[in-house]
Amino acid sequence: WARTARRGAASYMYCGASLRRGICPAPAVRMVVLSIGTSAALHSYLAGRWSLTKRLDYSFGGLSGNFAGSASFDPLPASSGGISTADLLRGGTYLLLFSEEGAFTDDASSQMFEGGRRLLYDCTGENIVRVSFIDAPASDVADAAAARKCSRVFHDIHLSSDADVPPRLTDHPCGPDIYSGSMSIKSDELFELCWDVSGPRKTGRVRSTFSR
Image (cartoon, rainbow, N blue to C red; front, side, top):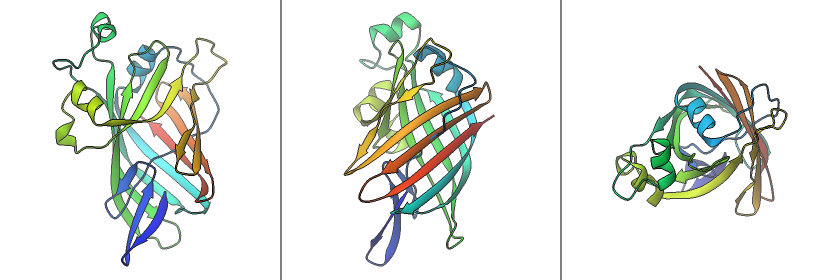
């Protein structure tokens, strides 16, 4: 979450999310209890609705505070030209549309801002899940083909069959800043994501907790 002023109005941006008066993306912590070794397994694990909380802490360049809301991972239907051979062999598109909605409360001012974001989780690979931003309104993301056309890469999740190896998230460059993430799957009903950002524009951490 980074704050920028625009003609006297406050807007809040964090590399891909937006608040209605401001929101942006989210990060994670390492403590693996449950290991998921394939993209298909992660797809099955994530699918459905979750409660979501976030804690944002910035030493500079962003707002510190708490976010509370809900999130869902919804399978996207196939369409003409929007389903791959791998998808067909598995019997589905293996694409998940991630949507979050909620409210952020700023520590310093106690102001509350509603917001949300959407991401595309592409679980068609064997053990790599690609996560992308979706740069289009919900009405334009009706199926797999439409989602792919309006997406841009955020990061990848590398999975291992070794239960002692946690999912590995690739770094995400946002201008001159670098986001480094981690994911810990703690149980069937709880996982965490954490992103640490460092660079000339901002330094901080965003920790997201998903439960159901």
